[in-house]
Length: 215
Image (cartoon, rainbow, N blue to C red; front, side, top):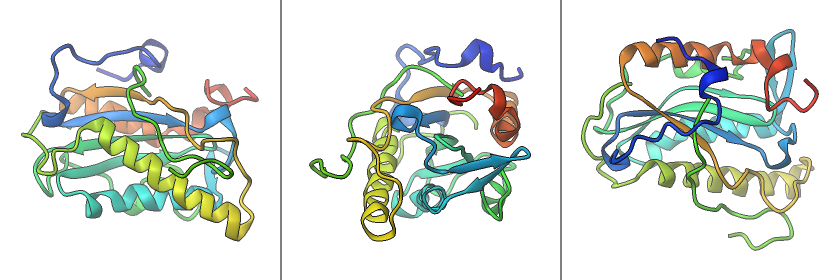
């Protein structure tokens, strides 16, 4: 099955009765509040990350080290959203043929969707309170997909606030990320390959991307 963004974008494909604490892989999209382009720009189909975009990439890559049982796979930082694959399961387990971490997206200027909103709230911005495969068994940490996305949002928001205060990064209004996110359970290897391909080539479709306010 090839991933069809027109068919799947922002449609809920959450499986009824599916235990998210014992899942395998899931494709997630998280968007910046107000679709502000805070993470860099696309030039000739390649994503050039801003310091904030580099920070988001770093947080994504660090999550497996902080949370046993959580693995990250293909990932891309776009100007105002991210796409990535999160795997919950055996400690250290990852989908076969996982892309090299340094080739995911945004490294050296190289670039590398979706479902119903599910996540809890997140840390607030400046001036506000701070607040694939098949399933392989429950994550040892007991973390669910909403937990992982919430922690990603919280960590990136905290570091972004620091960047605003210390490095003059563009400020945001109230919250960095939209309250919700979009998800898709990856049910087999063919779907995994198709979604990885979609993520890797996402920068090439920016001109017609629904998240591009200038399309």
